[in-house]
Length: 501
Image 1 (cartoon, helix red, strand yellow):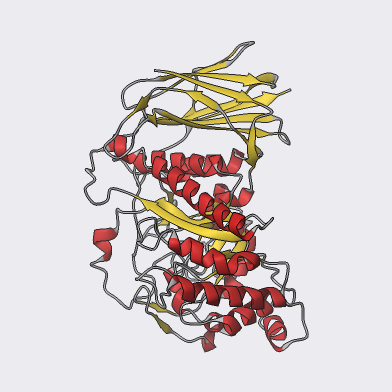
Image 2: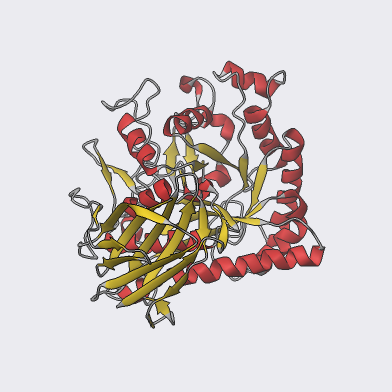
């Protein structure tokens, strides 16, 4: 199979906002308890954070982490998680039917985030709470000193403000599963008034309004229009959520259709951009609303197991998908699709980070292991910085049950001027044939190949519980005066980094 990528230095989509490689920690399942926080673990530091998990998270190079939810958010009292731990209440988490001890709260999250090198994307409860509670939280976190709440923060151990920049106005408020579900008009009014109050406390913050929680919701489209009509002047981003798996009438052996689901993501993003721009045009506004894709991943493996979990436990084994190789290939394509929309998608959060539909797992004997989806995400978060180029890609296509004209090779090209590198990520979706790849750069003087790797050779249903998965060298790369050529194995994820003179 022939595949050609033509890139031109002058044909840029956008500079990448590094927050596109964000992730998500919710007070759900074992994400926190026996995940990132386990004071009785041999690897626990002085604050109870697992150092082995910190090391794994740092290796993923996640720059931003959304917290504390998720569905958990819509019934959460942030005040429960501050102050002396022996005075914090144990509450019913009625979103996930767990017990929440609140031994991990706001200060713990801020300290942990700093240790893993990430900034917070904080969320306020607009399900069961409202304007004053949200404004109070901004004051507690960001106001320097001299008020009751800022002084309380100092009393609780952090005299300097947290200076949290990005805030989410609730979570999935259109979802019938959400505690405190709102109609579009109800949410729009509440979100707008909350945004005004929060920015009165700190006018430097950026705010994310809830878009539709699913493309499949019957209010999709009308929700976005109604919310933006009211909130447009006071918010900066609109959120999107989307998960993929073998759903409904999908056949688990239908690999060609599964690997094509990034086509759905591309259509979803393009549609929401059009909605945002329609409201902008109608308002005759010079302000552009960008997107925060603050939940995305593959999620379906754990659904049956979750129905058998006994309620009202602390840190139950909920949403613990064990990912296989085909999931890693789809995650790679989904991330490339986000990057192709880097002009509008500025924030994205892989949901989630540890134990709960996550690339990083802790097992019952207390060790850490990495899931298949860790590898493509890690490579892109590590090396995918700079400017996304609008490449011309010539490759055969195929038709699956749901999707037409799907490219048999997915790719994205990035120019990192600071590192003097041109980086191509490419995934061969062909199940049987090599992709004979030719990269033709215009406006670049390629000096040498810095690194070429492949993630390949595993059964599509194999997972990484045995720890044998790894990224390995891609040997079949050649540099000539005119182009770069490589042979990409069937069903493989690949990266080629080239030094630019």
